[in-house]
Length: 97
Image 1 (cartoon, rainbow, N blue to C red):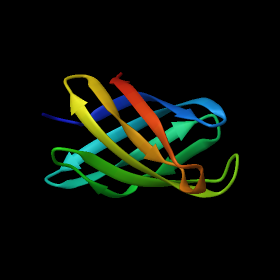
Image 2 (cartoon, rainbow, N blue to C red):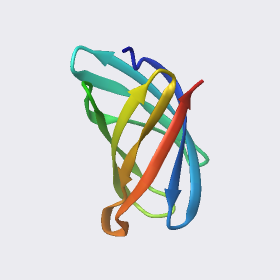
Image 3 (cartoon, one colour):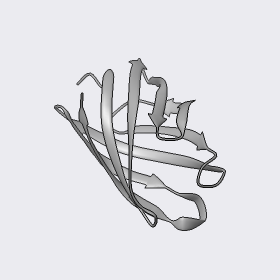
Image 4 (cartoon, one colour):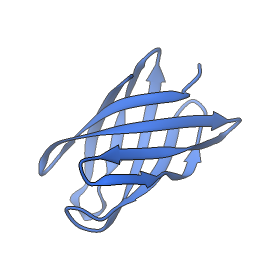
């Protein structure tokens, strides 16, 4: 199953729903891409592709932190969690745009 493409994702955080656009590209087991939202764009890193996708990205707003994503792709849907540092985990969902 190809994960390549643009994904519109939603994260249910303690500060409410946060929406972003993630562009993903898998090359074997390596996952690269970018994440864009209201606060700008950032590269993803430490990305892996397989039965599950995993990647990290750094944000600066509302406060600096590293977000750690784990997701499973089924067709054009994506489901998983995002680790929000000291704020725990938040549900993640998305659709391929």
